Length: 553
Image (cartoon, rainbow, N blue to C red; front, side):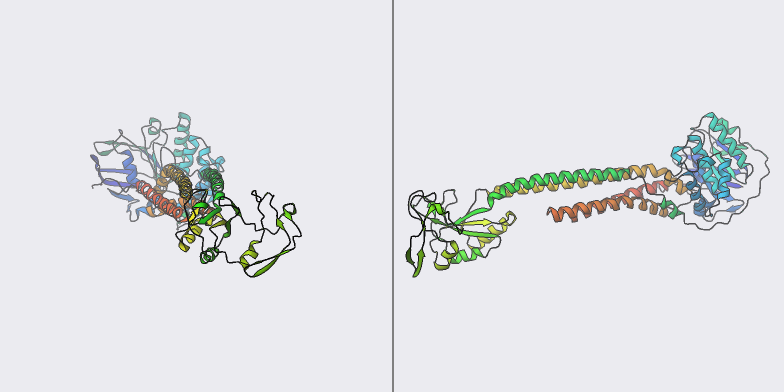
């Protein structure tokens, strides 16, 4: 027997004023009243999901631990029956045993399922059965707890006449043979006609309309002890991975897009930088035809310092034949025989060194269009025996364009007066490179943000869809702390996946594309975790009705 006495509740108006109600074992009690008179509020008091505003007695004993009482002795079924769609009917029933501190009893489970005529649905999930079957499964879930009190809020509101009649008949047959108090809040006359007791809310009181004299069955005590229901729930908690496949496909598409952009970017930059591989050094005006404006030769010590720079090869430019013709010295070992006259057989002395000249390029050849004789000397030999003090221009060949900036800086450190000439405007190239890099970074950031928005949106939708599930768990005895633990376990699955994807992309960008974004990716992930925690906490607090108005006794 359940006794509620001195129930007084005030929101912005008085709901109950010193009201009382008594529920008998193995009988069905209905409560009716106009909308807004407090039927659901009364159920929340009886279900211990709201702060107590009354004297509450079960079998003559007051409640010392509302959380345990709610978990073990009260079953609650709503209009929209709540079960766990990620479990089948059997698993839902097994979870009900664990939740109420009982060991799983298959015989008892089968008896209850048969009494509700859903024994054939064991392997079906709740979202794949009819509305009437789902409602009867929800009642079976509540009965698995072997409750002292079963609360039903408009259980037949969405059922047709056939399913309504079947449900109330099956429930009546079960209740009249078991020591359970049943309270149904309803407007449905079909249920009211089956009620053993009928109450109506009038003028802030709970007024008895009909009372039946039913011999109450004695209650039996079931041995209960804490069960690991949280682990059981977590085992079945993994949601549909469809969103993860969508995210993975999106990430893959965007990564391919980044690679395509990077390829285009590299092609454009390489085309420009190829022209940068050849630069000229001299003292004079920075112009294409600069040789005539050269003011002084490049000293030997400067050339030695320049030769110390890595990733370059320096070749002197020499003026030959006339003031207007520049012929680059040949560094190869062979000049085609068709251009030379062999067997000259002469010796020449230069700087006290005697050389035997076996051949030379004659006056009419493709090298010297002016017709003067040209004597070819390998550059290595020339450097070995002669002091080159009259070199006015150097050709610098860079072996990798990525070192150009560093090389130019080192040249400037050696002699800031040296003119550096290139066919490419270095400042313009720097601007282009900067713009392209900024565009790439913006694209990557956009991808991360889109991923985050999709993930948060999906998580918010998931949380919204799970509110009824969380509230159902709360009604069945889970504390706010336990609900938060379950919610965190749920979202960690998503965010571990998100972190792995972020790190993969970040590492790829950092080491393959030289774009250091690991830190930014980790910060984005950390921010998303904080946001998720805020959303989850807000949701759980609402489920826990922590924002309930004051109850006045």
